[in-house]
Image (cartoon, rainbow, N blue to C red; front, side, top):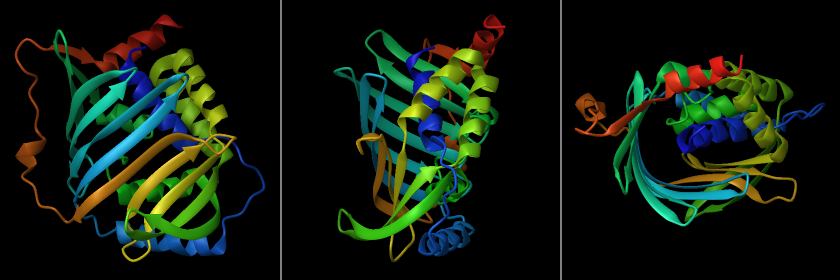
Length: 266
């Protein structure tokens, strides 16, 4: 399985987490989450800078860039500079609401990968480019057991701490198996066993998603994603979200690749 598929699978896995039985949502956290759900109904577009880091197996990935999305969260452009194993790669992801294209600048030329939104949704990533929708989805994935206050940059935030729900873990494993077979399911399980806690940072005044962290048993981050310079209700021409692979680029169809990988394991 190539790097892009592993990265997508890892993001899905860390957002799903591991089992937590017998815990109840903190009443203050429940109140905040309900307000966030109500605010998500406003369906505003987003323009923001983004930084992220991820620890997967023994490999650490770091990225910095910019994201723009329409209100539906399915039309987006994400430009990132990724650092992987000492190498720096520039990537551009563009989604027109149906297909997500990712273009990566390689020494030998540009490599392009495509994945349908249908597959993204099966993998649990259909709303990940809309932060308000992302927080709404996390309410189904986690039990939030505590709330505190802190700062992200100069913004006062609520810090919601939670543990993953058992049904979310099963859904993530089933989705990974459906998309890529037993190998994908094993990768999902490996990530699930690492994640023990999640922290979500929400602006106190605007209820806007600012930061997400998933943590291991020692409290060390496995995945972190942070937004800054956020502008809401950004208007953008839908034509911006259309993409055509550059001439001569190698195009990889990730739907077909995952389908073949699954068939090869049967």
